Image (cartoon, rainbow, N blue to C red; front, side, top):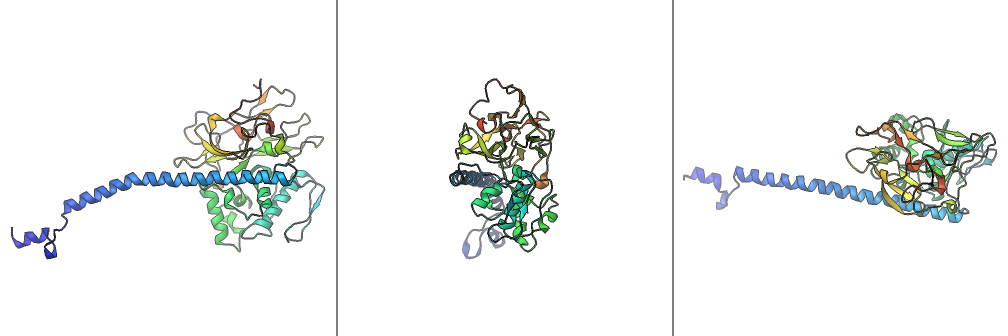
Length: 360
């Protein structure tokens, strides 16, 4: 073998160099190891986020118990009432809030909390029209109790990319928080202060509709459109529920993720038959609950306590607000409302316990 051939096999000083075949083998081995390790690392990251997800709910459960201890066993909910004057706290803007009805008073209270707790600040946060704040914003009350900033990370699932983007945008331009809704094409300014965890209506609404028309419910089968009627007597009032009224604390959902985001393949509503979401029960325990393991839910009709008024949702979605479409693998167009609407309200159960005997 001549000197030229030897130069291809040996480097300077007589050391043997890598051949092209050997180099390709090494690259192939590295690629194989990466392909094996990447899914493992991805699963580890998802597991870490899920731990944080459950920790968020666990902290909110502890706050629920603390709030009840400080406020006569009450479950946190909007407390402002119509016909009463309220002044902002914590050196807020010098404004007096006077509302003609309880629902408007609750909307004013929610806006007041955002004005005082928003970080970066938004003292001129506008009053939101046609708002039932209890549905997606009851968490504002417990955040105010904890003197937390908004949007506080504890109210946001680590998997919730949409709300993380909103929070990042608020901090990127602290002088102009009013531009964030425009940037994301949001229909109202309040959405960046919403939560990944929804408060079950049983914690702030009466257990059943009333014969004089009082009710809180859905408009048809639209998952996000609520209607509220205090009734002709005005006795159907929101808020004021007590922890002691919960009949099955370990089986009744207080807070829940309304979207399954941790799977990594597809986001699904909590009602989807393949969904598993994190839930907080009234005994402060947290768990990952599979939708088929939960009761179907619904209302008990006011004049026939043994008859279920079912609540089912159509396929829908609002990705710009963090709510995906149902998915293309649903077996039906309608899905039961589950623990968003519990048979028996706060005295009912959502899982691990049957619905009231005789309900159809």
